[in-house]
Amino acid sequence: MITTEYANGLKDVFSKSFKVGAAVSKPVLEQQDANSVFCADKLIKTHFNSITAENTMKFGWIHPEENRYNWNEPDFLADYAKKSGITMRGHTIVWHNQTPSWLFADGDAPVTKAKLFKRLEDHIIALTSRYNDIISSWDVVNEPIDTDKGDENNMRLSEWYKIGGKEIFEFAFKCMREASPNTKLFLNDYNIECGAKMEANLRYLSSMLDAGIPIDGVGLQGHFYFDFPDEKTLRNALERYSALGIEIEFTEVDISLYRWNEGRDKSDFFTVRPEDRVLDQAKRYFEIFTIARDYPSVKNITTWGIADNHTWLDNFPVKERKNWPLLFDEQYNPKPVVDQLLKR
Ligand code: G3I
Image (tube, rainbow, N blue to C red; front, side):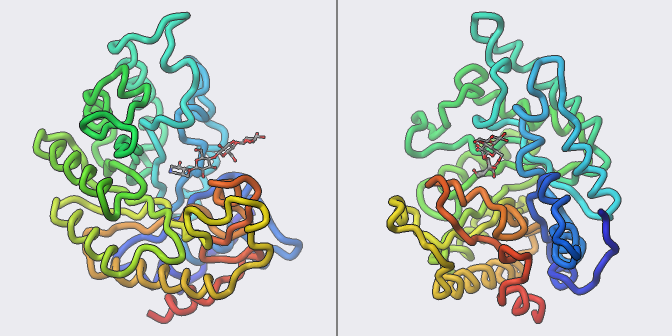
């Protein structure tokens, strides 16, 4: 059910600076409580002016067989965005994860480099010709850098890279620019707000920009923690990326209430929400939104989900471990930080 529009949500408070988005799926948008007072649809209309398909525009979902596309849910989400007068981020074209098995094979043999380029081009043309009127930015290449297990240039040893080389990523951007000239094209990744992976990403981005590859921005996924990042880290990252002269979008923000290495054992799971950490989480959210306002290159802050009743972090990095990483609680009520942000 589509409800009417509401004013004075997060999207209105930050409208002069950036869009406020959320990752969604059809089941999440269709979920209603008995009175439909609190629901994802209503929260979107109130607080968000951008959506991202959490899964269903990824290669393996939307293009499961060479000659079959699965437009059902992506079309639903695109129509929802159009009817709601909001924009959509496209996620994602070239990623090592959630790829269909046919893509890298040709019968019993691996696909040739030339054929992989052709398959990618066909895929790009199909998706852009269908969604050019609603998608304003695309995560063209997702997570190509791997500073742990990558090669000497920190390139992830994905099938894309092993078969297509660096050229496949460059081709993806060029092909997207041609097929979708009015869409902003992003390189998207996680853990690129500090340290070796940030440096590797900055180097990679600079080299692509110097070579004239059409990249409009960097996507900072923003899978953060209640105790990370601090203000200094965040500002430093925004300064470094802004200095490249490209746009910045926070594309997948959520703030875990566990530290990375914590809660690996069932006996260490939180059984109730740890309120002291919710206070730290609030500080993180408050800083991200308010600090981002100081950087004109930031154009979108998208959270990876809407409310704590649906989050991938309930199953990652540990299966069935409850987490509470979003701005709205399991009943769709705003956490106190939303009110603090609304007053800004
Ligand atoms: O739909 C099937 C269901 O039929 C099946 O019964 C069930 C059994 O496990 O799996 C369901 O699919 C799951 C899917 O999410 C939908 O819930 C997949 O197993 C699961 O792997 C998949 O996880 C997604 C993950 O990407 C895949 O790597 C998460 O929802 C999604 O939030 C996450 O998003 C990624 C971004 O695209 C890129 N950045 C990192 C981010 C978090 O990993």
